Image 1 (tube, rainbow, N blue to C red):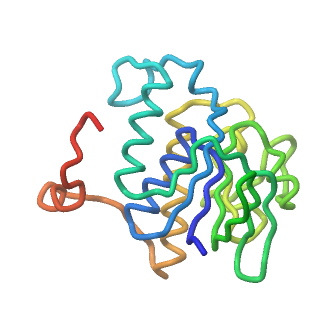
Image 2 (image 1 turned 90 degrees about the horizontal axis):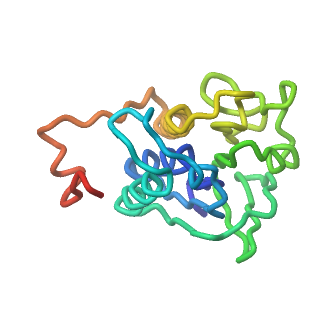
Length: 194
């Protein structure tokens, strides 16, 4: 059983996976690669002067891979169901179980609806931690926002969900903040270009 299963490989899903895996949670990420990022060119992502969305995704994927996210590229999730211990995720390649699930499927809210998440109008209703009405199920990005569909907002939502999962797991408020003295140990040979 994985600790965290993330459905969606855009900025929200990849950001969430990076944070959970970097901090020791076994993380699987299903990426059907249908993100709108492939149509984007970014001038408004902090730290990135100008890049196309596909290039940014590749950099984010490389970073998630560096921290051993089990990234299942091209694998589509068909359904998610609650179990006594967490969630059962059915994909075209089989069944995966996880304690937490993070929905990062952009404006496609079908999985949230079938899982039984509450909605506020057309968007998935979440609290400030990004947790839905279904315990240990989180929703991020365009799923929870009517119009604020920006890569940087989605990445922040993914990070918020991850930190709140880590907080639940550790039993105390969790911060992911590295300082220069430990950066080499944390990041190893990963360069700025990864």
